[in-house]
Image (tube, rainbow over all chains, first blue to last red; front, side, top):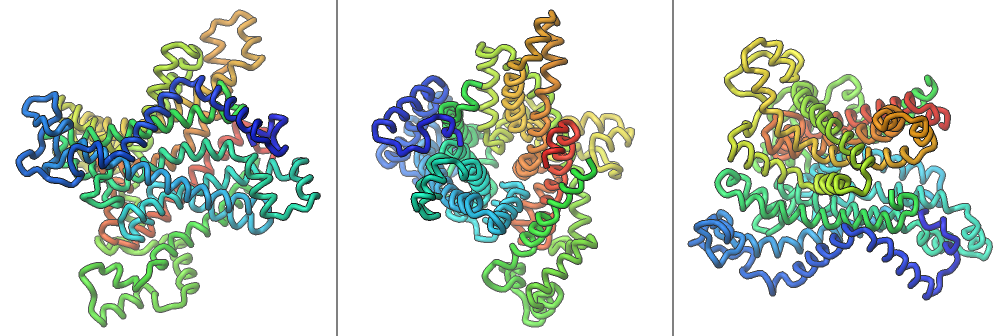
Length: 304
Length: 336
């Protein structure tokens, strides 16, 4: 939808074209300082997640009975072995945070890819086929959107039994209507353009028209949405974990860590502060990137 | 206008039916026996099982069950809570004012801070002020609010001892609910200090619940303002020699507010979702906490009824926003 304004769109892109597009994208993306910072932080979190086993000083569920609720290193009474202190059962908070990054990124990836694939397919069908199928799909999406997403996810997880996997399924279900709507809107605006009709006349069948001809030209808003829903997936999964309906203890998931730390908020602030800070920084980095992506990909909103 | 309203209402019918199917269906998609499921780990005897099956109508064909359910819903019967044995609707109505009060305060808080912040950011575009406002807004937008609530408790309740940690009013005060809104009831009760206590209890939950709407409103106001400031009529107003205050306050703001109002309306779903977390953190006796408790207690009639009622509230508010939007902006009402 967004890229259709440029004359190059629709025509089969050559490799050189693609490199030029990428360069143009990077030019606009890197103009946004925040987005670049966000990208670096995000890459850092990814590196931490990949190297968790190597860089974590302790095991995520290893308990040190002699060091319960030790404060971080800059405070009095700190234990030099535990940089960010320990929790109520003597586990190293830093190591748990490092391992927790895996869960958050994993949740984001799985939820976004699940919601994206299902949402795009449904949206393409709704927009391309139209008729009663379109009405049916869109009404179902309206119904999903009528419930507050966190509440619906909560109820779905309660039905499916609380676990991280089920939390991811529930979050993907409540997120995919956004992809369906975006894809459908983009398809409707592209469907009757010349290049699509040309492809149809040339004998392309419906699946090819949908996936190879129309879809690449609807990608810009979908990419922006993917970045946004990556961060909200992390937030929702942490919220479910916090409510006891996501990852179960002793998994070092950030939201679950917060839930376990709740009773110590007035005694040991660091147990509560650290996991939340990790969530905030990760989500913030992704949202910064999302803003940059939107500026770079969506000419309508460019520099507004 | 009447036609517009009727069309909008007509569109709600399939959504309403869909919501009832979703609320009806969720307990029945579970594998296994619904009665055993509700009983949980306690289990039930053979006779009690048959009795319950009949009581809930689980022995009937599914479509008959649904029609029964729909008929009950239409007559206001949403079933009885398994835990308190009270009608779900009665429980919901008793707790809803608490959530309503909290949500209203949160949205007012968000609008009062967010709209001016957005205007300032837009008029000083690119300045350090703009950048810091938008930076703060993005942080607010990325905030895990359950953590934010805990931080505020640590700081204001723990370190400064300024605000209470939970509840709606100090236990020292007791008066029968009139409106259900604690701020109003405490004033009506005439008891000294009751209103102040209610306000103290409300401050932190309001901030927590209002944070994300605040960020969204500030961002939306800024971009709407920027769009309007580029319009010809604003340039004309400037050229006429009007003071910047009049140009922004009178000419630009009025047009920029239209999308902002829609945004505020669309925050209702976000608020009700956020209420689940906020009410859990502050032990606020509203429907969010009630739903979480019901889910944990496997009180399925309450979950089912609550789900339905909350969806209806969201649907209703969206309808009102839609209609208001049509009222403010005649273009919309003629298009459809």
